[in-house]
Amino acid sequence: MKFLRIEDEVIYSKKRYKLKREIDKLFLDEEYFQIEPQLFEEYDEFTTINNKIPEESMVKVVNGKVMVLRADITTSIIKSLVPRWEDGLKLKLFYNSSIYKNKNTVGIKEIRQIGCEYLGEASVEADREVVKLALKILEKYNNNFILEVGSSKYIHGLLEELNLNKNCENQIKNLLYTKNTHELKVYIEELKIKREVKELLSNILSLQGNLYNVIEKSNKFYCNNKMKQALEELKQVNNLIEECNFLDKARFDLSMITMLDYYEGIMFRGYYPNSYKEILSGGRYDSLTKEYGKEIPAIGFTLSVDELMKYVYK
Image (cartoon, rainbow, N blue to C red; front, side, top):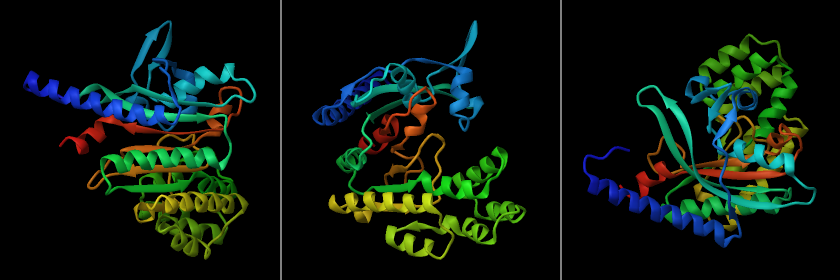
């Protein structure tokens, strides 16, 4: 953000500092400790794992080999910790840092983020704790929020049934991500897949809303074991949201896809009124840790400081 007057910048900086300290305290109160993520990632390794991040948005540095200025904090943390991981270890950590992106109109942009990671705990209680923290933060700054919830297992289970090549699979994911109903129907019409699976894909973008209404709709369509597992996990999240008296804030979406393709299980995004960008996003990502040598239970979320500031201090 640019300021014409130094005084305005000072006021804004003080408010941002106060906001960050408040959120830091929420994490500290739940016994999370602060960590500083690495600044650079090796380009080849990063792009292999994060293949949905547009290459043109990355800030690259060449010094003998090509490096990427930090584009995702979770990847940076996992890369640092997994090679040293000991069996039985459990970590609850948070960060207050930045990622960097190339923007066509402004050049290199710093994006401030605060987030948490709960590593080494596979139980439902870990999911509950992290989702509950996300709800607490959203409510603290605007009670009129929406929490979108989905499960990557539902989409992964469906795609496994299709048995498509990687290009076709990515095309379907992109159409789901952009919620392009017309193009999705046109694309799958050309695919040689089972009629019942094609029928589900044609209607999957309508499977949104109250969880039990969504499940009732989904019962009319194809469902394999992995997809059933996804629905059971979403019921557990729904129960937690109901316990916290936020059921009217929840919107479940069986077609949910994220830009970061490493989630495996529940995913969630938090929005405030009239916001086009999420304030908060996260989920379970055990499979990401496996890419760095060892599969570790992992769940967390990231909060956009700059987006949150727009609503807290208008």
